[in-house]
Amino acid sequence: MDEVLRVGEILRVVEAVFAEMLHPDELASSSFVVTRVDDWRRTTSLARDDLVESGEAWVRWRVCGEDGGSSSINVEEGRSQLVRRVQSDLQDFIAESRFGWGQLRGPRDLP
Image: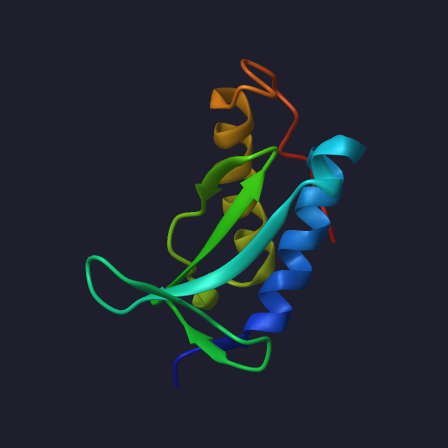
């Protein structure tokens, strides 16, 4: 049987990563959602109770007016790998953003 996670579980992981890696003013300006691609042009935001299987969803975020996102979510790799992937994607985003250009802020280990 394939592994699945609820969107709410993924959002808890993302919230912890954001709290660890963003400065307070950046965190206050941030928002994030888990989305599924319906076709090549349209995404749908998922509700906290929706189930996510591997490869079918992404985390999209907005920080300080700049948009970014994660690679596809692979839930079968486990929560610790999910944390590491989101940390890595967020680190790349921060380093390439106007607000954090060139900064290394992680990744750090989270529970």
